Amino acid sequence: MGTHSSAHSRAARTAALIGTEDEAITVAGTVAEVFDFPAEGGAAAGTAEARLDLLSRSGLFGISVPTEHGGIDVSNTVLAEVCAVASSRSVTLGEILAAHFVAVEHIRSHASESQRSTVFSATLAGARLARAAARRNNETADALALTSSGLAWRLAGEALCTPCTRHADWVLVPARHDGAKTAGLLLPTRIEGLHYVANSCEPVNGGAQPAEHVLFRDVLVDGDTLLQPASDAAAHSVPRSLDLLLEAARQLGGARHALRHLLDDPASDPVTTGLLSARLAAADAMTAEAGRAVDAAQIGLAETHRTNAFLAAASALAVAEDTIAEIRRASSGPAALPADGLSPHLSDILRESGELRRQEHHRQPEPDD
Image (cartoon, rainbow, N blue to C red; front, top):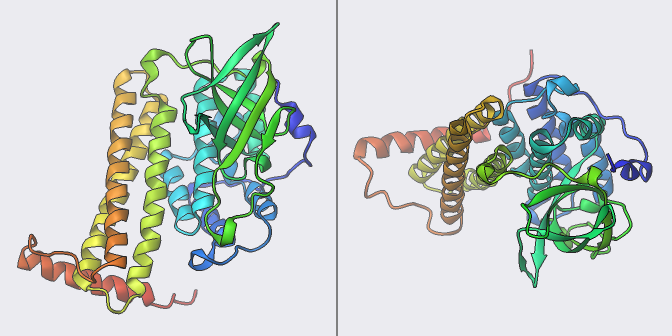
């Protein structure tokens, strides 16, 4: 596969080996503390490059690698929880992990066996995959154009990519040749013709890291970088459903972060807190169920499996977005949500629930025996 130049331009890594799903979630929380930007305006520890190197060495990039390639292939419910835990502390970390996991799924679904072996082996060692969204005339486009160049192609255009793509190992780029179906190109991030517009991938004023603006100027592309194009019947493909699932997970992470602030506010209404906590729990449950549907689509051959996965992931995303919007509205506006539609019994239960959640939120952890 024509992707080895990236490895030649970087020092070899040695990543930790994560052995269980519980460990993956724990590691995600630990790494998220390093990426955390206090109060949305501070600065995380160390430089972006140092934080990303720590992330690569953590072993998180390898947790979705299939077992036949040496990974533990965590369930997609756990993958979603990893992204939610990360996003509850750092929007940037959540985006980086989600983009990587979706790109890995593209490799699983559309790559040749040789491509899988190369990428999965590198991923287990800490290699990172980023994703590109094509741009044309300052608007989103579905793909960059490929033009023939002998036995290869040339790629030109611009894209907005995962934050800090310059520090990734590969970037997955949607491309199309002469009206053909859109396919993925897995390009090393340090090859001739790739130009990163910004001078740094450090956040501006301590905020969330913006997408990386990348220019593709006459990039030479050979056949080894091309993933098998998806067919028309794969509009609801597993990678697309996973993308929606992990987007829902990132929204859940943001909702957890916002709810923590609400629980810290002594003026917040307990009924509101209880109701929003219940909505967040429901969104969590829908996301977990969508993860199981994506699991089934990865191993099932019937189109029904892929359809169910897409519908479940889309529903989870809709509920997650609604939940974070409600929590943010309660955090920034009046202390209470309208409770006219609640029965007195449910209102009492929610008040008790909200007060209990606030107590648990402030409870000091018990010392280990």
